[in-house]
Image (cartoon, rainbow, N blue to C red; front, side, top):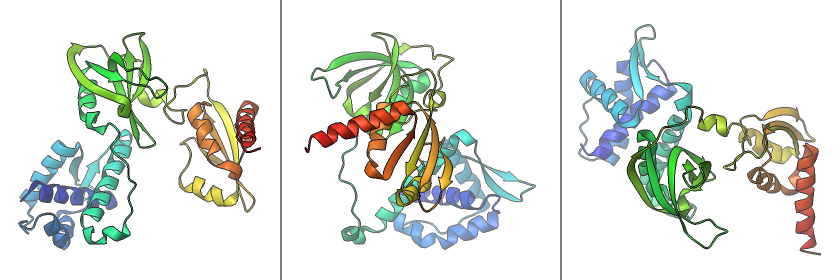
Length: 306
């Protein structure tokens, strides 16, 4: 069987256990056999047989390749995924990518009916190398060019973590030039070199804590986040409910006149740009400083057309 066939079977097992924890071997076997037509599209040389030995081997390979542990529960009388909460988002994104890839791969004849965004990869070719450097505590060297600076600078940094925001990836690293922790966008990073020089990872750094009350990639500019109250018209409110602005989002009012929500965030440029994108469908109610910033931007924009 080709690697594509094996991987497709692994992911089908994961998908089944995600939808129904504590699935018995018999149920898994039946599910895989029902999916044989799909698997043969991935690999037309695929063997149909699926035994308990095959499952045990697949469980080992799933752990090695995807970092997902599957165990048998005697009390539940079936197999289940052993997964901690912090790993949940990575798991969900992997399954999302799997579903999307297979849908597009199996629907090549439907190309005239699928319109994908035309965009090039944004520095993702360096993802693996950066993750390797983070895991092994290796300093990195690279060239970097800011959008507002025509000059390219050479950097030496200690990489701490990776962060994604709006289809762009950033490496969070301490710049050895001034010892400040900064975010570097991968699409503006080139000539990556992973050195043999190691560094000590700071005990007090936690990527989740650092951005817990941030919208976007810009670091906080105040000591404490602010309580933000926003009012959306009822139509826009439906979108905000289905895709919350932030995990701190709380609904205060939800009726035919408005959706009013509360957020706990630092007010940063990224947040302001996001709020401006809602135009007249949004009214900022609190804090006063944010109201003034939004009003000022709208006034400057209006003057350009007067």
